[in-house]
Every structure is written in C-alpha cells, then in structure tokens.
Image 1 (cartoon, rainbow over the protein chains, first blue to last red):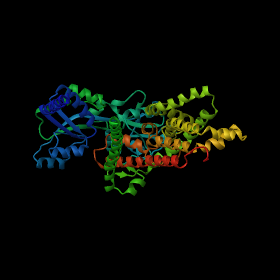
Image 2 (image 1 turned 90 degrees about the horizontal axis):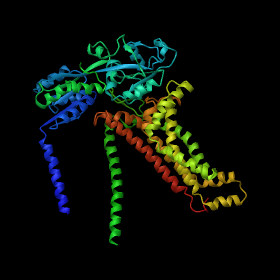
Image 3 (image 1 turned 45 degrees about the vertical axis):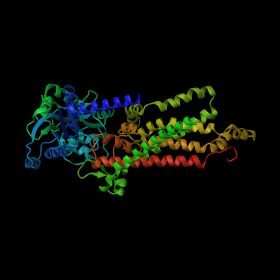
Image 4 (image 1 turned 30 degrees about the vertical axis):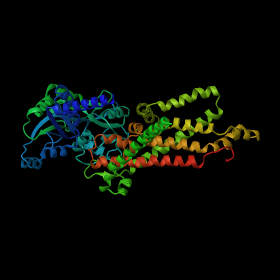
Length: 271
Length: 292
C-alpha cells in the first residue's frame, strides 16, 4: 500500500516537472513598479489564452529594468520614463538596440471635496501646497480654513508621477496625510471639506471634485494630446525588434483586449 | 505503553514545529532588517526625524513612527483601561447574574469584530464627526486611532480582568465581610489588591494588542510621518508604515530592509510588553489565601 503511494507521488511529481519542461516560451519582464500592475493583468490574461507561454514578472523600478535589459537578463523592460542616452549607449556597446513601445498613459488629477469652491490650480500652487508652504485655503482664493494635504505612500507609482511632475523632485512635507491606495484617498477626501488629494484619473468618483491644473482639465483627450501637465507615457522596452512569443505578448498588450484591461487598472489606454 | 510514547512523540513534534516556525520567522525578520545598518547607523535610524525612504538621497529616520506608536498606544490605554477594568469589576462583583449574562457576550462580541470593520467605522463615521464636532482639520488622527484601538483592547482587558477577579478565593471575600467591611470596602481593599497581578497582565496584553494592530491605524491614523504635537494631529505608527509601503518597496532594496528593521523595532516592543506581563504574573501571583 505504502509503495503504491510512493509510486503515485513520483508519477505526479514527474508529470509536474515534465509539464514545466513542455512550456514552449518563457518571457521575463522587469522594471517600473508603475507598469507592474499593467504587466501583471495583461500577462494573466495572455497566459490563459496561451498556456504554453510562462511569463515571470518582477518590479524593481525603471532603472533596474533597463539595466536588466542592457545585461540581457530580461526580455521586456517596463519603464515609466524614456531610456537615457547613456543607457542607450551602454546597450549598443553590448550589442542590443532597445526598441520602445508606449503601452499606456498615466494621468494624475488633484481632487477636493465637492463643497470646495476651488476649480483650478496652478502647478506652482500645488507644489507649494505639498511642500507645506501654503496652509490655508484663503491663500489661494478659498475660505479661511486650514488645508489638509493628502498624499500617497512613497513607493507607489502615483506618488512617483506626483514627485516628478509636481514636486520636481522636492520632498512632500512630513505633515501630509498618507493613504495607501487611490480608493482610500477618494474616501478620505470625500469625508473632509478641507482636504486635497490626488488620484489616477481612472479612480475618479462622483463623491469628489476633480480640479483642473493650469486651466486644463485632466481627461483622456488632454492626456493623449500631452497638454495636461501631470501625465506621462508608460513604456515597454525590448532589446531588439520583438519576435516570437515576446512579439505576440507585446501585440496583445496594445490590442483592444489588452488596452481594456489596462483601462480597468486606472490607466489611460492609447486610443 | 507503546502508544503512550508515540503520542508523546507526536505532541512533542507538533510543539517543536510551531516553535521552530516562530524561530525561523524571527531569524528571517532579522536577516532582512539588519542590512539597513550598512547604510545608516542605529542612532540615525531610531532617532532620525525624517522618513523619506524613496527620495534621493533617502532618509531613514523612524523616530516619528516610534513616537506615533507609543502615543497611540498610551492614549488608547487611557480610554480602554478604565472602561475594561470597570466593566470587569461590574460584571464580576456588582451585576445581577442575568444582566451579566447579557453584557458579557456583547463585550466579547467586540473582540470578534474584524479590525478592518472597526477601521472603516473610524474612517466613515468617527472622522467626519470629529471634524464637525471639534472643528479639527482632519478626523484621521491620533485620537481617532486611539479610540478605535481601545475598542479592540477593551474585550481583552475586560475578560482577562474578570477572570482575575473571579479567581480571588471566596474565603478572602467572606473573611473581609465577616470582619464588618462593607461590600465597597471589600472590593477596594481586598478583591482588587488580590487580583492586581491578573489585571495588570490584562492591561499589558491589551496594550500589546493595540501597538501591533495594523489595519486600524493604517486606515484612521492619518499617516503623516511627523512628530505629533496634539491629540488631533495625524500620525503614522510603525505597522501602518510597513503595511502601506512594503507591497511596492523594491525587493532587498534599502527601503525594503528599512521596513523590516522597523518590524524588528515593533517586535522588540511587543516582546517587551509580553516579558513584563510574564514577570508581573510570576512576581505578584496570589497563591492561596494567606499571602495577601
């Protein structure tokens, strides 16, 4: 009896291993944590349709992704910025010729409580707010009420955009409240008439009011025509023109199906 | 005889397994946390005032987070200790049996409330209330978090204290009453001193539950990594910081190690609480009726 159990065990183990070997393609993806949820969602759907391809994804930041691309330890590098000239040079020196593909856009909009009369704000005002220099709504034309600044945890991609486009690499002051997700910011702002926060456009709800920046309303259109200041394209890089499984996956990312998944994650699709 | 030994071996292995797992978790915690001290000194880490783990250059000072954890725990103890202990005294000594039978399960039901539900309540109900009633700029603050945490530690404090009061020998109580002391005097001078070790243990275990609680403080403490100056300031206790940032910290990066090191500090805090509770339990244990 015991022998039989062992046999069964061995057989099933062997089957698992051989199944592992039978996988035709392996795609490894590395890079930006902002693009990580996109890659994960799309990869899940892709693997369901193509069970013979295994995709492994890790997120170590855009820089790490591109470094892995140069060292040829990854097939696709996710990035929330374009490749730097010196990185491109390094890649060339190692015989790679990085190819860029824009997969989606990020659009971060400031939000306030619906009772707040504020409609528009400038980038400089936003920066001063988040540096803790403006503390009262009356300083930017509101009521005489203290401003409650709500920010995201520093490791989120949303914070990264904010730091880059609004703070210009300066620090958000320590008194800013922290929320761990877009949803939590919506919740907190909708319950506090003095609060201001920022979220990915895809998470906007009726319980909060979107604020235009420099007179431009954050939307799909203003993001795609690059007029909205707090937006950026998100990239996937390959070491050469994609081929085989990698090409098939990249095509899937920018297909209607892939783009729909990306939109569901709160990003702006390409079309 | 043979089954005796085999049963013993089985139980020994099970006990050993859980200890081994706990030990390995601890080893893992230290292995992942200690590398941060190649980047910053212990002093900079513990007493640095700025927590900017992702800016360049980063700052890894968790002093505001430690203070936040201590402040939230102390304020919640100020609320939950009187509530918990007094409820316990009432239930054990003063309440009618029928009343106690109704109240006791209700208090214990509080312990069954998932922390995320308490957190949600704090966020959606208590925070707007604080804003409207006290005119504070944000209801997501130290006081709100402490209040929600005390909801969580009251059941622990109450039921453990009640057990301690119950276990005071009846002879002590009857002796006191027989000497002519009133019920109130007996309660204050005999029953409470006799059960003080159990009650202190209940308080400390309740507090250690509060300091380690994550979900509630993540949702209602506000999360500002600054040193609090008032009860209504937003704060970021250590568990909230770890929970909010761990998911996206780059694997084995400095930020990741710093979060684990924060976990070590938190672990040492709760370990200290438990050692103190254990000491009290041993030192002031009421043995028999003669030692009061």
